[in-house]
Figure: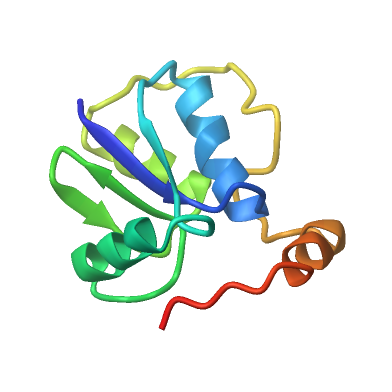
Length: 111
């Protein structure tokens, strides 16, 4: 499987996607959309929208998706097998107040 995950460096949703990748021992490309405007533009062009996380699995783009939703996609398409291994973090949760505060200290301009 070829997996490209367009993620924020620190975000509840993005960390949930990473947790699912670890849980199922999946190799993936972790693409930083906050510190690299080219990566963000690529995500928007491929997904047709500006929200993250977005995960591309073998050419199929899953836009604005949680880790829980990624796992459901993987399971329903028989790309992974069910496991009792815990994810280790919330897979369907937004950013914490601390994460929002940290991101607010950076000015990011894409356009």
